[in-house]
Image (cartoon, rainbow, N blue to C red; front, side, top):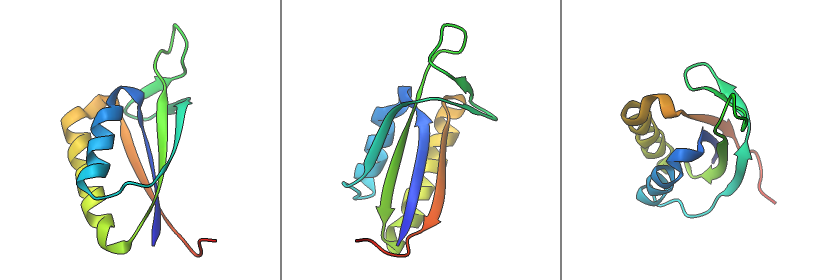
Length: 96
C-alpha cells in the first residue's frame, strides 16, 4: 500500500474528484484552503495579491491502483497545465 498526497488548485476540485471515481478510490482525507507556492503554478496564498488556494487529498491506495491513479493525474496536469496538481507517493508501513 501507498499513501498518495495530491496537492491541487481548488479550482479543479471537480476534475480531481472525477479522477478518484474513475480509479475506484472512494476513501480519502481532504484538507481545504491550503496555502502554498508551486514552481509552475505560482503562489496561492488566499490574498488579493496572490489569490486562490489549494486542496490536499491523502489517499491510501492498493498497489494495483497506483499506476492508474498516477496516469490520470499526469493526464490532468497536461490538460489543465497552470492550474496546478502534484502527487507524492509515500510508503504505508501500517494502518491501525
